[in-house]
Image (cartoon, rainbow, N blue to C red; front, side):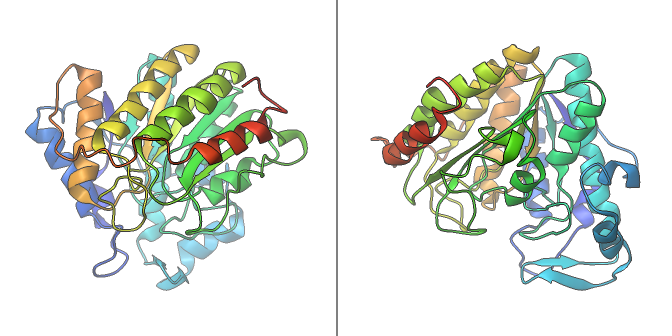
Length: 335
């Protein structure tokens, strides 16, 4: 599995003890090396302004580039080097998606800072530029008209949602915890204008885990993506839905995370195996690292043992949300 990564991503430090830290990437890298999976690693070149402009407003870009040292929000700090590193992360995501498009193979953008909370003219939630949205727009310019973005992060991707709210050629599906940051993504929101019906939200209450996500995939995600028939699948890959994660309260096990990724890889047969995973959240480094290594390993035919396999939700605790979602989106899709 091609891994797109630059050492520069380790230089981004928001503040001491900030959860979005370089240790997230070094932990993943070390785990991959331990299992002989740190092989096909591809760095990207310097981030380009024209790449970022595919999604973001020039005034906002200039603010990040020239603003110096300041806080965008209480949890998201800009340093003098932030622009260069965040632009490189966007370029890396774009390169990973292009590789998958050209080669017909899964790829993984191992980047930071993450991106799905960044909108056209704002950053927040540890995000500056929206990596996955930029990659989607780039693929569209290269002729892949229809994009499916599956957001598995515990926090709703409000930035991605805003970028594509009116776009009928981008299907955005988000599974997230309800009632936490950023407070967006209700099940009733389905997009706007021509984009109505192409946004699907599954906001699960605290405690939902493996069985809930399995049912959501079988009853909502797989049938909708199959009907949409995307040219490529892009995954906002957040592991903060794990039961060990300190920033939220969903209860997916490591095996549940791996199963999600495997099912999406199978689903990508719809589009010639064009699927790209792009790192978003996940703040328990041991859990984050073993999930990533296990998924890369299964693509490569190497079994990585999993330690964090407790099944906390075995009765589909989120069934009510799934049923409500199906009621809302059955106006647009056969479920």
